[in-house]
Length: 319
Ligand code: NAD
Image 1 (cartoon, rainbow, N blue to C red):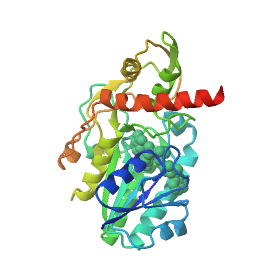
Image 2: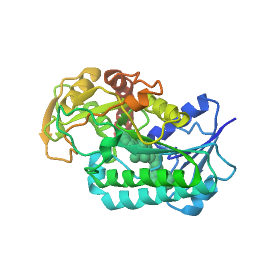
Image 3: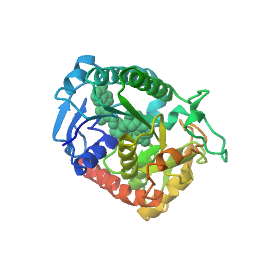
Image 4: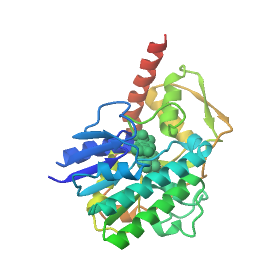
């Protein structure tokens, strides 16, 4: 039985990844600074530990692992990324420095690191797609992206030095149930689902920016499938993972309203929007046989009811 350590297993993507690894027959140790918020972990063993600490990283690796999946990060949506730069840079740098060093010292054969398309520069709408080499010359839009880029290089340097097989995915926006949906760290799809769930039919919601920014949103089961295929593959260097279906922020709102069966108007307000546009090549991850199987609309159909239920539960607890 293969053994996997999953960092950040109390969080959104890693929580789903643990389920996938269990279905592949792995023995899994999950680790996170906090217990999972929305449901119990599917891991065989769940350890609460602070991965900024080098000793803690060494301790959680005891027993030996075939694969380490490093998804722990201090992160959130655009509002958080632009307001907590120092926390993001310090905490994530410490987590990645210490986990990469500890994994190499423990002779872990295969190490997966979760990077982000935030490492790319801003793009104009309609620009040809960027492949992975397009990350350089580097000009990420935010400090979260700079830390990810440095941690990619760090993992690759350890791989070159020790022979540890390093796999790096650059995630596009990921969404689905059991992710943060309130509190300031939530990402756009969850925030819009929450706002629509809270709005009256015929009401209005506030949306940051003018609604024209272009993104793609990847349903979590597709992201997890990409992580798993990439880690098992022989592919070296970072690989983009994302749904090749691009929508504007206004189209995101419209889709959520359609799924909710509500008519809601949009009030555009000033706020941190991030880059204008995204357009990435997926040829590398597709060479593993990966395809996005869940359309954006289907993903919203699976996510909105879960967030609407959380909102209803919270409102009934308050009243
Ligand atoms: P998440 O916040 O739900 O999960 C991250 C987990 O890391 C959290 O449970 C958090 O408690 C844990 N963590 C934070 N600091 C820690 C510490 N010091 N020690 C141990 N655990 C700690 O985020 P997510 O959306 O599941 O993201 C997972 C990974 O994917 C992150 O590395 C993130 O940067 C990356 N990523 C996510 C997206 C996305 O759209 N969700 C996009 C690009 C990249």
